[in-house]
Length: 102
Image: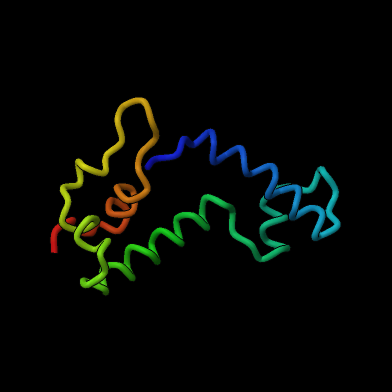
């Protein structure tokens, strides 16, 4: 299931506000400074890291029920239609340049 980038970006201001509260930072503090000071990645980077970790772990566990669904299915099955955003599984394969079949 692909989630719209707009929906995901709607969470960013909430994340930034939480960082500002935790750090006692002003509203004018740049976002990148908040991430650096807190030692936290952006939500986009966190999602990508979690997706990479999941795909790599799943690749190492061929007996996992999800393994065949993810790695044996043609990549076109994971491609999003033209109205929605790209799928996280397809993006992960593309970035890691992993073959979709074992």
